[in-house]
Image (cartoon, rainbow, N blue to C red):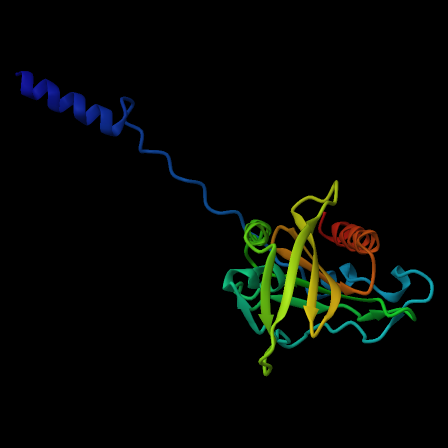
Length: 217
């Protein structure tokens, strides 16, 4: 009799006293990527730039693959500069204008969107930065390496994003470059710049994020 009582108690513990089936996990939320028209609307144009800037290349609504990463030492540091390499082909990809000004400043932009949430990308980049304050890059088709230092730029108010300054030294010359990655659900905004100050790059990043947010929110 005692064995029967124990068996009944175990059965109740497994199934629940009220006889209801166990709760089911909620299905994953549907993520809709930006349309091409939305991505184009989110991209910066020459009208968004300060006086004197020009757009060297028109917005490209369907850019091809143009990643020339080279070899990174250590390999994990690739994620600081080419964070979307392993995300697969986006549903929507827009390459913004390549902006220049007479003083040699440059800025380019990409807007990518997938049918999947991409928020983990920010952590991927910041985790890589934590171990990549200095590293080396050997460009494709070259044997000499560039020495690189990297640091995250503070940007109060920037949610789900990261801005980075890189100082690349190659053949005794040092060049400052900038990258920013900002995620909005399934969409990634990427900025690449050079020839400017930290403050200027952060202002451009804020402007690009505001334009994206006006489309996605």
